[in-house]
Length: 207
Image (cartoon, rainbow, N blue to C red; front, side, top):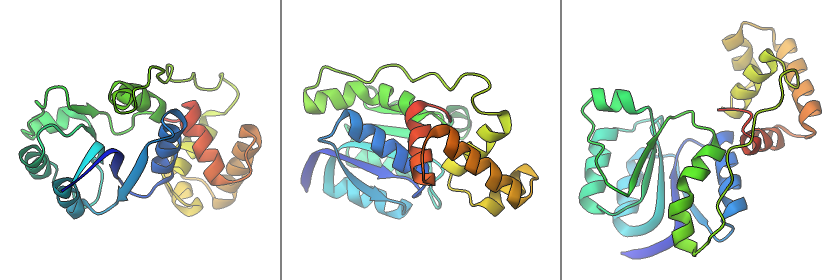
């Protein structure tokens, strides 16, 4: 069993949201290292063999049996600092035990990464002996900066949807989606979709 006190285990699908969250955490805690998995079946074994400084568990991870995994994690490593990205009410309705005092956070699955970084600051500051914490989540762009439709497209871009999927979700033509994406890149001052998604996450434009 090895200790990885300055490593965060991120168990989440490989989306632009995950990339943006990692970029934001690196910005505030550059010493933080990452272990990544998108395989729900690996999480318990990884935690059993390594003492991570932080575990971020995305409740939307395919194949995730959340109640059983939480029970196993608590049995294996009861002091593991853990943040679960999931809506709390459905968990309570399903009888998922949430008391893990001081070491567990349950936050909405659509939380904006800046807000999540702020919530994690007390834990990460302890790991690195830091005193500075991320400030409050930036204000979304002023009304009129992005149109309502552009923000809808932006949220789907950050969630790793392709043009065809966005067009289907929003009942638009693919050409219209492409036009919205070009406008988003221009307004955000970025040249690539990864850059656009990273800035959207960093600035709190999407939630």
